[in-house]
Amino acid sequence: MNKVKGTYDVLPNESKMWQALEKKIAQLMERYNYKEIRTPMMEYSEVFHRQSEGSDMVTKETYDFLDRSDRKLTLKPEGTAGVIRSFVENKLYVGNDVVKLYYIQPNFRYERPQKGRYRQFMQFGVEAIGIRSPLLDAEVVSIAYNFIKILGLKGAKIKINTLGDKTSRTNYLEALKAYFEPHREVLSYDSKVRLDKNPLRILDSKDENDIKLVKDAPTPLEYLTDDAKNYFDDVLKYLDSANIDYEISPRLVRGLDYYSHVVFEVEADIEGFGAQNVLGGGGRYESLVEELGGPSLGGIGIAFGLERILLALEAEHINLASEDAIDAYFIVFDEAHKKHAFSYAEMLRANDISVEFDFKKTSFKNQLKRALKLNAKYLLILGEDEINQGTITVKNTVTETQESIKQNDLLTYLKEKLGE
Ligand code: HAM
Image (cartoon, rainbow, N blue to C red):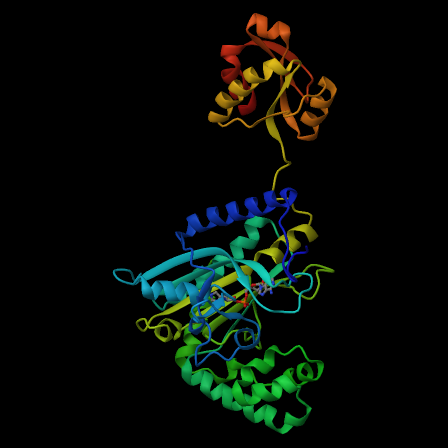
């Protein structure tokens, strides 16, 4: 049997990287005071398939199905809508000006799989919902900036743009329509449809001809109202004051339809990285909370694709997970002594020391071989003499020095040595 197309297994030798990455995320989130939220893998379809949603991702790529009672359900293709559904349903806004949340979760999109693009993939995302403030927007950009920084990635940059408020957006959409209309015939099939439904999407097209046309298309920056311009300027001022690097990218629009004002992406800039070089993307959304039945509140967020982050780390030869190692390995010469090893292991493990031993009956040589393969720091040797004398021979596998320790002193001895 094979795995489902577009999915992957995290094998034991890879899970350490994932754990290390998740730990970094949790530490980062603590610094910014964001709390974790976990929402279900599936939602009622209308959470994603809303009237206003016309993005390719939502119309073409979701895993939709009927459950056994004919309810329409969707595996979540992204994190934001589910989080907002939960925010509204649980009235998290009551008594809070701003609610700062984060998640690490799987998403599902029926896309053509390739390196960095999967049908099940993991996102680390944040959503800051409530108050509408350039400071909050700057904070979320700062999270993206520092996430990359704490990972040690050098080849990544933040691209930022604004779509402005409703008026700016309406004016801009009209200008875009007027620009593309005379070229309707040369547009790709998808972009012809987009021209009628949502011309903003054309800017995201991967079609070669479309890309040529997009080069001269008007940008949202030319159609901003004064309010929207000031808002964007304020966000940038905050970023400048904290020396957060970014690049203004005037035709950046993003693949989802719920954005207004600030949109931004983190792009990998690593040689030979491949086509899927957008590590993360996000922006401000002003109507999502209301559309999902909540009060009139906006939010801003970003999500990173964690497989792409791991690929970027690999490309830059960064290993977040320290070498796999265990603290101690019991070596016994007689099967009857295994019960001693087991009871010591119980005591050591209860004190946070990692311990292994051999489960099958095997020679000293084989036990030693496995201990070294597992990178054991200490060998704990229990032979006839040791048992009779109430001692354990403890051997450091790096320095190859060994000492005879009284069994009662084993814990104190190891704790001290491992703490050095
Ligand atoms: P998105 O741009 O659709 O935004 O996805 C964010 C990131 O998820 C992408 O930049 C990419 O790294 C990763 N990603 C997307 N699709 C795949 C895939 N098929 N395979 C691997 N990685 C993928 C969102 O999802 C928004 N919810 C972000 C957001 C949060 N906006 C506001 N708050």
